[in-house]
Amino acid sequence: MSTSTHIASTLDHSRQLSRSTDATSFERDFPPSVPTGPPKNIIIFGEMGVGKSSLVNLIAGKKLADTSSKAESCTFAATPHPVTVNSQPFVLFDTAGMNEPQNLSNKKEARDAFVDAAKQAVQLISKLDREGGIALLVFCMQGGRVTRSMQHAYTFFVNVLCNDRVPVAVIATKLETEEDMDGWWEENKELLDRYGVASNGHACITATTGYKGCYQERYDQSRVKVHKLLLELSAGDPYKEPKENWVTRLVLHMRRILPPAFTDRELQKKLVKSCGLTESEAKDVVQSIRKEEKIKKKGGRV
Ligand SMILES: Nc1nc2c(ncn2[C@@H]2O[C@H](COP(=O)(O)OP(=O)(O)OP(=O)(O)O)[C@@H](O)[C@H]2O)c(=O)[nH]1
Ligand SMILES: [Mg+2]
Picture 1 (cartoon, rainbow, N blue to C red):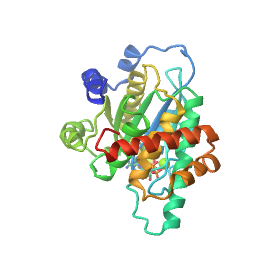
Picture 2 (picture 1 turned 30 degrees about the vertical axis):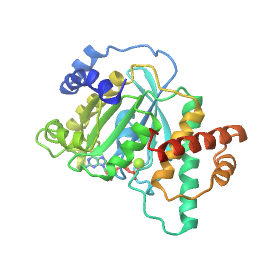
Picture 3 (picture 1 turned 180 degrees about the vertical axis):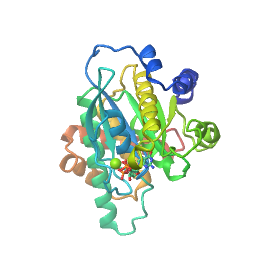
Picture 4 (picture 1 turned 45 degrees about the horizontal axis):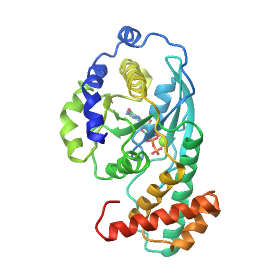
């Protein structure tokens, strides 16, 4: 199923969900349940400073994630945080903020940036591969700020990492001063569409209680909205695929966004030495990359 078809099939229902935010309706829609299997993995991603770590803390109901981390322009570092929502176990992967990659003119810097990014990305993939795949992507964005560089993060996680096969929730933060937080979505949905940001559901929230708790009520409502969204959209089977396919797509993408840094031979060595792939996994990845890049040069599909 294509992303847009997949998205269209659940969109209406998720809109209804995001309207009712009181605790009673939450209990009606999601009565207390018993855990139904291993934790589901949710990846929270978005630009730097949009409120990803604050969102983790809002979901958890306590401070798990550090909200003052520094980020680089192209990094795939992710910190896992186990949480429980309505008795269901989840692991929230709080990713480092991602902005557009810088132009690295220095060859050594370009090579280092490539190796760092590849290492972190392969670590993330290996963990997800071992631990049940990906159930849901959460694209965290700052309400009032729709930018081109947010497309970079969206493309990486939705199209490249998950091959358009994982449901996407959009969560817009920092809306506590809006008269109607949910109104933000109606005002911005066409713009998001133009930027290619498709989703299966959304929530317009605040992830801060504010000075002396002045936004506590809106914070509590936000927590209910986010919990509903997560439970609803993560209900399907998690997405998983052979690790080599995952890594191939990722390295191909990185070769497009970062300056060409390595020959195929060097890349194979780096995938083993720095990224922890086995010799045969690295060989398969490089061969697939070569094949895909040849197809692309001839004007075919990648
Ligand atoms: N007013 C307001 N501030 C928020 C909200 N969410 C987060 N912040 C603040 O925004 C700043 C960045 O929040 P973080 O949660 O660290 O953002 P992040 O996306 O994890 O940042 P990086 O990990 O550096 O990319 C912090 O000062 C938060 O307190 C919100 O909903 N409203
Ligand atoms: Mg953070």
